Length: 226
Image (cartoon, rainbow, N blue to C red; front, side, top):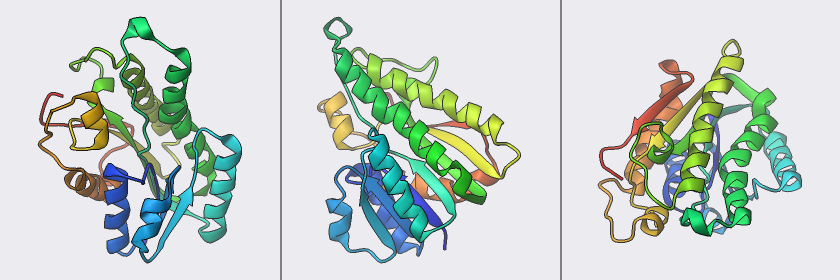
């Protein structure tokens, strides 16, 4: 049984990941601003914690709750994300800042809080987007969101280099279209070829085994545009 920390678990891929890890017998800490959906599942070996990744005090308190239960973390999945579609001419900097606080600083903060508490080996998996991949197809209105997802790709490469001798592996998955509420907001009417559960199943397997083969790598997990 491994100890898993997952962010952004109130819906979509994060929600399905919690179920998959719990059903496989792992101990899961599910972090989300809205912790009720996972709490309602009443799953064995799952701690559903209300956590705002952008609030340093709340984040620190949440990490302490985790470490009181488990001294070592085997897998961290940085899945939480905030979406924004906004024409660049209509930029509202407070909204851009909010996206970066969740999508970039949230990954930075939680990972740094846990960095000395990972098992050996351990795997940190960060969920990015194809929109953040250099050279990929880009879409109007996604300047804040896609650039934030590009930032965590580079962050992953840097952490993998810095911690390459510690037994901690860092990888990032750039996802294509997945049938979630976020996709519906970004591309109304588009039907994705992959469900949230199907993508969660892929991430579940990669989180447990991918660090045997990859470190500091970007894997593009997409079969469509967007």
